[in-house]
Length: 166
Image (cartoon, rainbow, N blue to C red):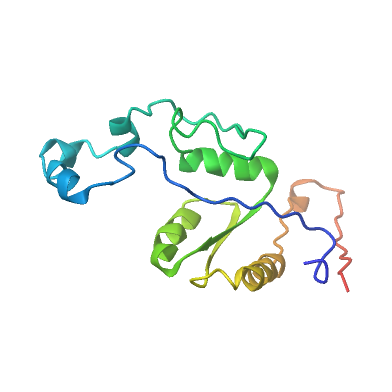
């Protein structure tokens, strides 16, 4: 990335499901019949069923080893909370996912209005992560939309200048 731009910070995260029922399925032959019960048709809220009912507070709860300490105490962040945090940090999000999860994360990306997010497909062994980040960064940085309301104020003249990176 240093060859492309000097103005770049990278954060990396991964998604790991909660280590409690119903997120884990240690014995499918025993747990799947329970899912056929009529109550689960109307109450299919995994965090609620697991007893994780506290909404995500949007704060970072990592210990000194980088372990997230609130996974069993707080629900997953909502799309609205993700949107808020992305806007606060003026971040560009690249969801690097498997082909299997591409459509799901495309829906998530589409559900984040007025923020920059994109979805890229990782190779099975993730060997293309650097290429994926470079390609998605190039897509993000190719287009700039500038909006002003110069016509709203008489006597105000705006001009735009760019200083492109070489």
